[in-house]
Image (cartoon, rainbow, N blue to C red; front, side):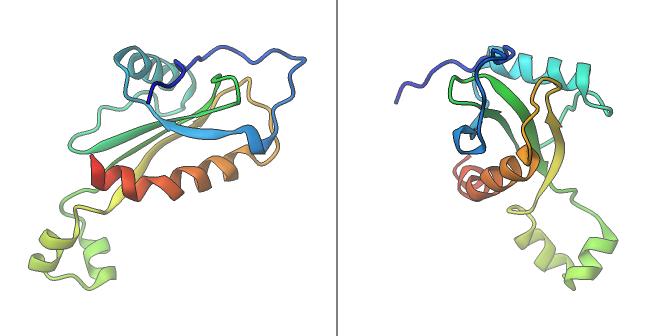
Length: 137
């Protein structure tokens, strides 16, 4: 299925974006991935991110494809004693169960996106699809 190219452009001031118009799409195109990293470097307080291992990048977009937010999920750290203790995992269990565990490494609402409750909406939409996307990838 062919989808519209994502756009990082600022939505026109006259066009009001509602939460119902917001959707979350994977960032897969090379140019979109470059834009994704540029936006993180420019606007996120931790800057860009070079994930090691598995990762999923998403852009939250309005009805016209304009970017409102970006999210990066990455593979969990292999060795993290407090986490393993919390779950009660043995080494064997950790090795078997860690692959579907992911970290939300970056979450950025872009400066021009002034929509009440946008963060909650984007987190819910990304969590709705993350499991299937992660396992498919």
